[in-house]
Length: 506
Image (cartoon, rainbow, N blue to C red; front, side, top):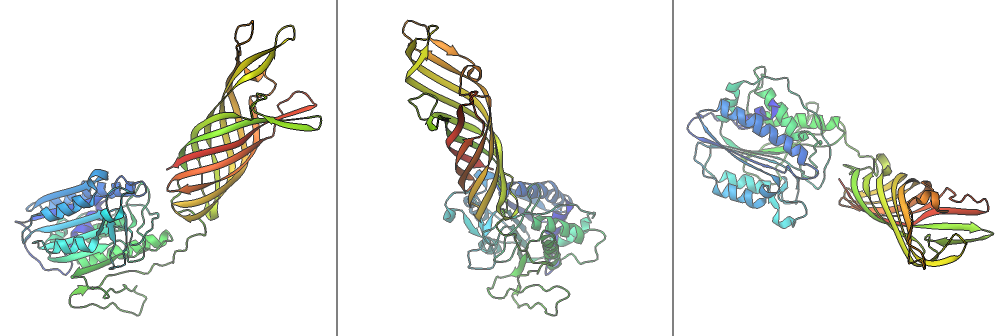
């Protein structure tokens, strides 16, 4: 994890103008969206590196400067108001170094080449969360300083994705860290150019942050022959980011600048095989981008970051279909009821593949209940006795469905499913009350004492649903395949004539 530290320090050296390091203060400002559901893990890994590696080396190698860190993470601290207040209250002098690093969500609002940062909690009003990176840069430029470096890992459009691994073969050269911090100038780099996403991998830093770490280690190592300047570092970061993106079959091109931002002067960095050359102006080093080795083409109708596990709560109904002597009827066990009512709770599992194909499975507990005020039982003399009845059952349910999903976007999908459902009865009871001349009677094992029950049942099932921002609503039906009756002249099948479920997927 040495790489990120080496890169940050080098970035300070671009357009190098050497000066003594001692006597000033290093202000290290970090905003990391560590609690976001989609990028929080990657942001946490980046923050872990910045605090446990980069900041430690900063204090070790630049020990004649005071280092102040301003770390903001989590929902309560990762806010625009904290960012504005931190910048506004930042007290600096002419020999100070200002380092700003952002890792989180972002988008491009069309006004310039650099991203708009989105701080705060997901779901809050966007107008209260957004902050332009260029505004952060320009505001910090107005502070007294010797060196300013602003870095951001954020999408430069509305998108998300995947990333890569990490390892460093380089050893630190403390003198090169000091050389980087002895430079002067104003620099800014972001992880993707206008119109692109910024990618990360669950459990690791983002593509840009990993490339920053690698490039920093490489350029500040004792084996490097490249002069440790910020322009050289930015070029190395861009190259490594593009290479990593190409390996992942995605497109991501960092862009950078020096001095005052001027729209329309951005230049695409050309690879060594190209005959084109970059152009510059007297006031800026143009924003830089790479063209990846392979263009990225996402498979049609395929998920970006599927949510495959969820908690589910549902409402189900069960009824019996009786067929005998050429006629059929449907009852809810009691002749005056059309169905049993049930509650369903469990874990939903949906592995998703390319081109919209998926599986739908999981494990659910179901509780069914039904009451009647008008049923009949017989006594030992075959006399019919009117009474009331109460029924309950505990059941385990396992669906095995093939599923097809239409991915209109990462947050809006429609799906259809079909397959079999397996039911296993855990237990149940039927209780008869208000029997004239008799005490209440309970049958504790419905699977032995009732004509309509078997402990195991298999059904043919089908249905559809909709997915919106991790919330899924689905509807289904099930037709029983097993005959519950022991009488060859009668067929009794148990159906779930309606199921409605609400799931939260994560």
